[in-house]
Amino acid sequence: MSTRADMTAPLCQISAASGPHYVLITVAGVLDTSGSDRLIASLEVALSDSRLPLLLDFTGVNKTCSRIFRHLLMLRRRFGDVKLLCICRPLSHMRRLINLTGLDRFVDIYDNRDAATAAVGGGRGVADR
Image 1 (tube, helix red, strand yellow):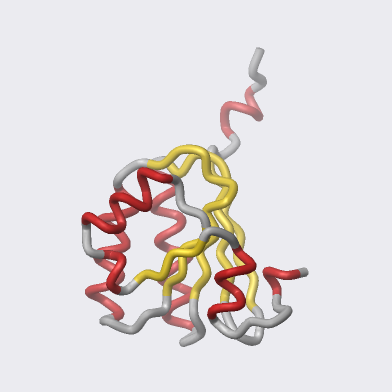
Image 2 (image 1 turned 120 degrees about the vertical axis):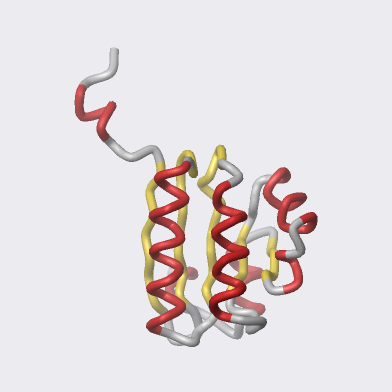
């Protein structure tokens, strides 16, 4: 039986950490409509505050809604063609939608966080601790 606290807890957890070579945003749980809105707000703040690459780690995500892709396309229009976003371990349907929407032209996709941090020259940064 669910308690009231269980029912009011967000389905999606989002955390952010900065390192010398990148900003890491980790997402876990169900990336539903409200989670998607919170994630995009976090990405907008990170893109506005830093020109470091953003690593978006979806390793802990087990379900998504399509709204995230519309938001990512809007971010692309707002911040231009600069490749600032790396996605770590997206679900298979996310990977297909990234390719179909053309997001793959400005988003790099990696199978795991280690590959993404190595690609942005992170060495041992926040994601490796």
